[in-house]
Structures are given as C-alpha cells and as structure tokens.
Image (cartoon, rainbow, N blue to C red; front, top):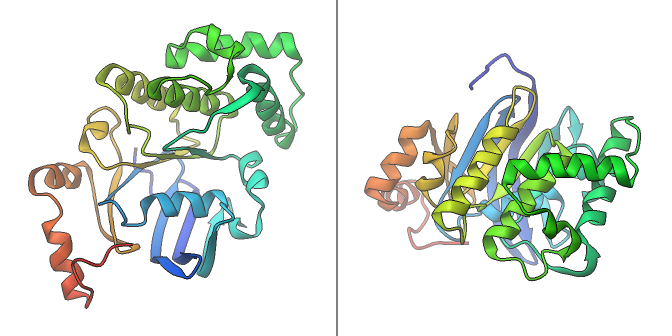
Amino acid sequence: MIRPDAPVLLEICDLHARVEEQPILKGVNLTIRAGEIHAVMGRNGSGKSTLSKVLAGHPAYTVTAGSVSYMGADLLELAPEQRSRLGLFLGFQYPVEIPGVSNLEFLRVSTNARRAQRGEEELDTFAFEDLVRERLKVVQMDPAFLDRSVNEGFSGGEKKRNEILQMALLEPLVAILDETDSGLDIDALRIVADGVNQLAGPDNATLLITHYQRLLDLITPDYVHVMAAGRILRTGGKELALELERTGYEWVDQELTSLGREPAEVL
C-alpha cells in the first residue's frame, strides 16, 4: 500500500557503480518507504542484479558516485554483515550450496545475530527449533530440510523456499529479492509468492527484481520501475508491467536513442 507519509527506509540518489573497469549503474534514483512493494523490471544486462549486489555490499562492485541512505544511515559505509544485521536482506537469484554446514544451525546463528542487533535475547537450540518449525509453514517446507547442509541437493524451488524461510526468521526491514521467480514451476512460484505476501507489512518494504509480469500477478507492487542502461527510465503502477507484457521493450530502445544512447548498448 502506498503511504506517502510513511518513513523512508531506503533512499538511492544518483548511484553509479562499476565492476572492474566496466561502468554498470549510471545514475539510479529510488525511494522506498515502509509498507511499500517495488518491482524493478528490465532486459538482461540492464543493471537490475547489479543494483541488488551493490546494496548488499558485494565486494566485486565499486560505487563511483551517488549515495544510499538506509534508515537515515550511510549504507555504503557499512560492511555487508552490518547491513544484514540491521535488517537488509538479499534473496539470491542463484542460492549457493554450503556443504557441511547444517541448514538448521545456519538459520539459528543468523537469526540470533539479527536478534542481538535488536537487543533481543538469544534463542537456545530448543526455542529456535520451535520458532523455525512454525516459520516453515510460511513456505510449506518439509522439516527434513533443516537437517541437510545449506541448499545442498535442493531443487531450484527448494532453494528459493529456503531463502524465504531465512526472510521469515530474520524479519528484515528491506527485503531485496533478486529474480526469486527464476527457475520456479507454477506451484513453487505460488508458494514463494504467498510467503512474500505473508511477510510484507506496514513496517517493512520489499524490492522485487524480475523479468516477468507473472510474479506480479501473485505479488501486487505499489510501484513498477523499468531499468535500462544502468538507470531507471520509467516508473508506474501494475499497469506498467502489463504494458511490458503486451509490447515488450521496444520503447526502451526509442527512449535510449532520445537520450543519446545506442539502443543496442547493454551492460
């Protein structure tokens, strides 16, 4: 729900970033308030996933200009683990497997780190198991997955559900979901989307990065942003996603041309 008077959780101003010597983000501006769901759409190479990695603090990316304010603090001055403890969550497009690390223990340590940041008491093993089994219901996940190594041998849908389970336990203020719908069948997509909807509330915000309007049939965004050539070209509501579904991205090429950029220029 759009709340123009709600507190700003994340404010991105003229953000530029590169990887090695390749400029990728070229002036991103975006304001996210509590209670909002934003969707960022665009072609491959438009800078969507780079934006998520820069916000999370991936060391391969260098910010060359601009600023990012998170809850009034300079996000870019914080280490990745500080960002996470303060409630910034990134759901990966391709969650990695971590052999030898128990999924249950990984979730317990992560949850307690977040609780400590909020001044809450650490959960012992038994209290945490009660909590995690309750949160498993959000993603309809078999408790047997808790006894396995993190994501090891999980299907694509199981990995994405495990990401949403992490989100349910960490209770982030801003959740960035990078192509959560990628590789999911219809049933898994519905389960993941339902989990996201259950976890969205008036005090947090969600940033969805996606190629496809189908995800937005299940999660209704307050704002849809179209990204190209490292910047946001257009912002609208759900109708913008529907327009993209009908017409594709030809208008993006026209707009880039009007801005003095070659239509074929990708990142």
